[in-house]
Image (tube, rainbow, N blue to C red; front, side):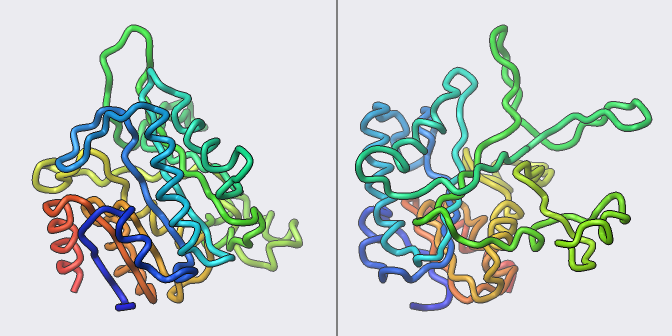
Length: 270
């Protein structure tokens, strides 16, 4: 296939045309069935119909994924519907014919407030505030790491962080003398600050480029990675693929306008 493809159409129609086992990594964020106003997609299906739809496109993802591949599925929820991400993952991993094994669960932290050692509370990141007497602001989403076997090796330190206490480098034999440790399953990746949502983020549900880059790093194949995103949106995964010089990329997008924005973002990197 061409090195980088941005494909216009329904993923259920395009995925079957892709070669089996042709991707090392899938990173995507499908519609959440929460009534979000997308341009070309009705986000108001019944829960049962939505879960059947998820199994259909995920079955194709499984087919095109290499046996040692990783599938990172970003799923968010509304505060009034907190079970939704878990219902999706159970539909994909449970029942008599599971499609995937849940290997890791990551928490994408968009905004966080922490108390420093000096006693000061510091807040960082961005979130969409809600007006409610029942629910608090939702500042995180799930990123489920799925694989065919649950045994795919990861490069944990490639996506890691330096040790705060440098004495740990020598204390722990597994470090090999390298100042790098596993980041764990909480990923603080804030959105970039923007001035105009209409011009800079013209899509109701996007993830940052850095989130895709984190998935590429931890999967551990580097520039040899062949990446797929069945729900491209405005192209965060395509931008990540170009920035990181990946060997192959395919993104599928139903809406022609969003696809055009993705192409413009990629062309801006050339």
